[in-house]
Image 1 (spheres, rainbow, N blue to C red):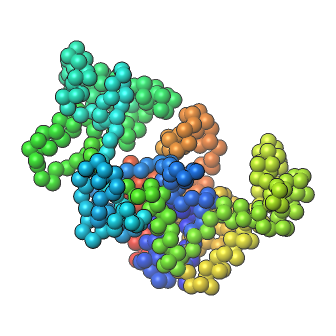
Image 2 (cartoon, helix red, strand yellow):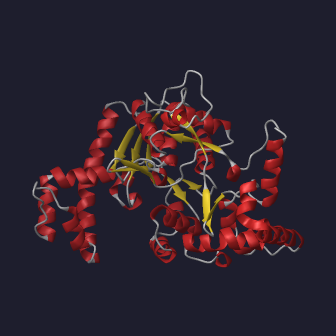
Image 3 (cartoon, rainbow, N blue to C red):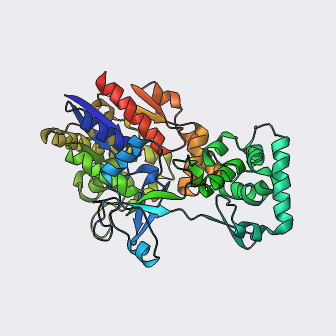
Length: 430
């Protein structure tokens, strides 16, 4: 039986594990995850009873296979939610679907409500052509917006920056009102310094012409009209947040006989219970125990993160313990008849865990995309995000050491997941 080790329990990793297990009975799969949450940048964090989405949270796709896959994991609601009833809000219901007031494993339909607060007034985002919008603008601003857009249609700028990209699509007036300073505050860099490709990803398909076309088609009640992703008015949303989809997927992987190994959880467990590891850390870095006798991670961090040599020593000690425990977990999954086991761990290729892998798959992304995602995920400055990107190993390091490579530069995770599934199908059929 072949072994497949999947590094990372994010959308791509868990989708890969699930597809491998459902398409073949001859592959043993283990998923390795370094954090204590599934879903990668799409995870949902529970903090003091409050669920917070750390990344993208609107589920919308034009790909039938993707929608079918979501529905398999989280069926669409078959009854209204409490807030739908309270607000007398009509939502599409799926016949025979679960009741969200009685079950958690359910996908909801949500109305999209986005606002921009500008000049002490709220505007729809994307900009709508409602009477309220023109009232907020006032006559003078409305004329400026209109003539500015006409000028942009006649005199197209070279698309060599995000600024010119936005001006060509919306005119200078709308750009200066809603895009210029918002973008600079969000990304820490003026739009004239940002590559235009980022605009194509952020405002995919949206422009004044697209908004006008959408308004006209809605007025004419056109059937099967094509809606640009940026202009959607409804989207799917898991009842417990986007991370729920990946929690469910992880549980389905385990039900199918796959193993999910969380290396971060393994390490934390060892710090609390492994006497041999605790003693080695005490000897190397001084007394580190808390009141319960476990290693105090804050004390340990205060010692090692200020001294590169001590950090290297910690890594060597920790890896030895984690690899031994992970190897034991893999054997346990094998004994249980797991068809697939995926591993998520930092520096897997440099560690002895690499020897457990029959096949390795690298998922890389352009540096600009990585920096932008880090900034969006963690709310840090652009300079700090780039310092972290530059500290990472170059793509060539991974592409030269892994059998297969996926470039995650797609505009949406749904499109990327679709490409993952297609490639896995090719690999299994080949």
